Length: 206
Image 1 (cartoon, rainbow, N blue to C red):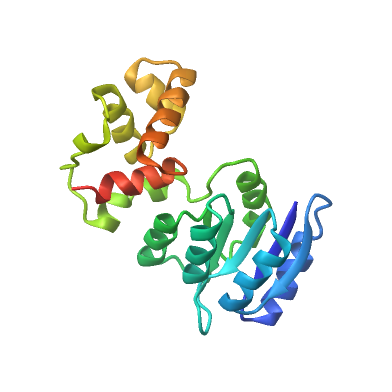
Image 2 (spheres, rainbow, N blue to C red):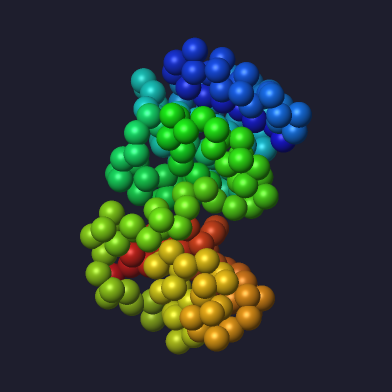
């Protein structure tokens, strides 16, 4: 997989590159030090994953990620930071980033990249489960304008609670395959990319 690393600390860039290239499946094709560079490098290299710091001078990683994703909705953006901040997590979820990692947890970066490459998000169900408190949401969602039926609404509510497909299937007495099919239809109806965005949508829709 082809990776771009962007961090305004050149030492961190070098360290991350060394860590990542210890894995034979990973090729670091470019390194940048600003949000502006992230946008330019993404356009030049079209990497499989952009691994980017959040806090940088000029354009932040969140803003750069938002610009990239607005033009390339299928882009895989994985964000890095030095601490876990609820506001950053919510913004990362909202823009459609594929993950949010704390830099200190270096051993998790390669597995996270591989998970994102396989189509997963790496926020974790524990983050999704905290969305109500992050967003101040109350269970007053009205999706009547989106052609969502009762069964689909039940599945959306389970996703918003942070349940995975197997847990949803067990809770609603469905097969995992049926849950996956429902989720595909729901995401298409709501024009969302993944279950993480679906959870954010649920808790923001009043």
